[in-house]
Image (cartoon, rainbow, N blue to C red):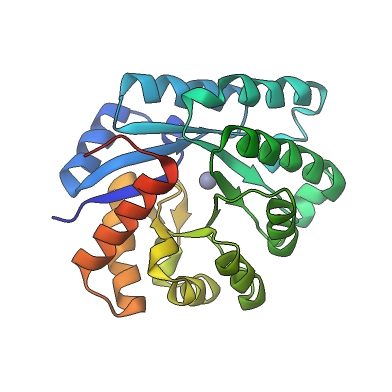
Length: 253
Ligand SMILES: [Zn+2]
């Protein structure tokens, strides 16, 4: 059995978390990073991290899709992250999303303002960022690097090779998800990303084609990465797990 870490999942969105965790432990998943999206889910992931200490770690942040509904409370959303970041290992899930349905409700400028506030918290507290960058890959990279952030994970990356080069040059990380089994751009990114900056994730409970991801699927992601990079399982598991422990400062053996 290989030891792997699910570096990006939404554990708070699941029922029967005890059984999800025991299944993921049985599959070899040695830690999970549970990402919040807004005030409510940030509170839940912090509770989960204290309940399942040294197994579940929290990432807290204000997600771009949170902005429209939270527009009257954005300051509170941001302040909560600033006030509680010491109990989390990461600022996430944060970023920009230029999908039309969102941009009409939360402008690019408004999204950038919130993301900049998240980057600011990460830089001040020396925490990594877990970044959602759909159709906004270039702007995400520019904001992160211009702010002097040194630790960032581009999660489920499907952007162009030119931006990927900037991610590599900036010393940032990329996390592979189950899209590594079938999605052209994500496969190319995973293939091109050096192993020493690659992580594994599931983005649970997202549906990939006809399959709903669970943290135990981190092992399936490992398989897909090994196939794409033509490397053996032990090497990829060891390296990605070490990368995650180091980046997030996880206190597991
Ligand atoms: Zn996510």
